[in-house]
Amino acid sequence: MTRRRKTGIPAKAWAGVALVAVALALLPFVAGLVGQTWVRILNFAMIYIMLALGLNIVVGFAGLLDLGYIAFYAVGAYMYALLASPHFNIHLPFWVILPMGAALACIFGVLLGAPTLKLRGDYLAIVTLGFGEIIRIFLNNLNAPINITSGPQGINLIDPFRIDGFSFSRTQSILGVAFSGPQKYYYMLLLITIAVIVVNLRLQNSRLGRAWEAIREDEVAAKAMGINTRNVKLLAFAMGASFGGVAGGIFSATQEFVSPESFGLFESIIVLAMVVLGGMGNIPGVILGAVLLTLLPEFLRATMEPLQNALFGRVLLDAETVRLLVFGIALVVIMLYRPAGLWPSAVRKRELESAKTGG
Image (tube, rainbow, N blue to C red; front, side, top):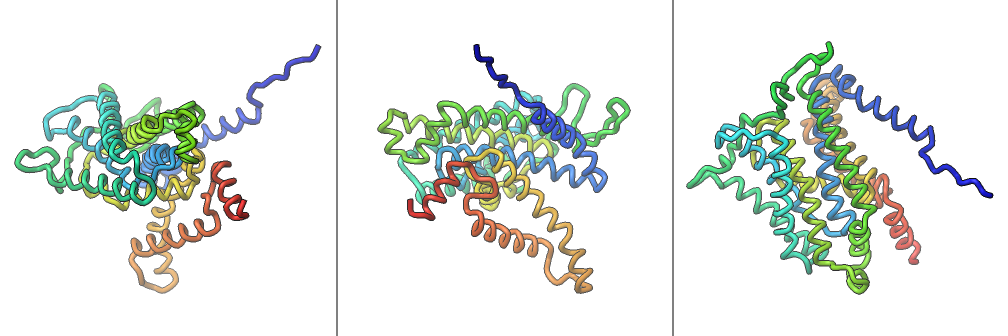
């Protein structure tokens, strides 16, 4: 008789998971030694991870170029702002509003996807770009004759996350340990981000995920194999939009202020760059791209002016200008030498290698 091999997770893998968990648990306290600003930046990194993973469903899995993804972020943000602020004197709890924001963004995703089902490439990019700008312009002008969004002034005094008397915006002592507002948000965002990653992994390995990949590779062949490309593409837009809606609601709560300026074209391009830089279709790569493109610009912002003072005795170039310049050069270099991204999926890597060799 042959003995069956044990297929359990090896001890080294569990040890690695434990180390990562400990590192993530201690990270906000280490960042807090430098300043609470860096804890807030970590929180923004997790919001961008959610956005990048949502866009990765559309761009990476289904192969549909979307330049208006930030519109769903705006929908979720304003849904939270309108239902948890003195603007309409409505103060619903966050666990009610976040699913509502995800559902509304999902509906907007279907509204965007339905007219664009037959579009591909540049034409799809132009339509989605227009959709993103239309949403931003609407938010900017829905202050007359009935004031819905307060127009360019935005909405302030938005409620933070709150569970009974436990507010995520104030410093509180828990078991003798002082937790600042950003640190408490960090742990909440970490749990939500892990949930989003798990959902993405399950989607990627599901029948629906394989259908998205089939459409990305060859839509005509996928349709010939019996895949309902219309419904599957609409699901890609809807699922991706729902993650953007959740991220938008979290953004409103953490900032306690929202305005149309936060949802411009540049934000859409940044989120798309995170997906492309990390590796389209590869969830760990997308996470890496989101973390790098969130932390690197802030690191450059903090170091450029002191570095110029040390080298030249004065500031020659504004920190924002240098930050964007170095940021752009880094992206160009990476795209030249790593066109599949820093951590590409195996399929995407094979496609590029076969294109180079002419196979």
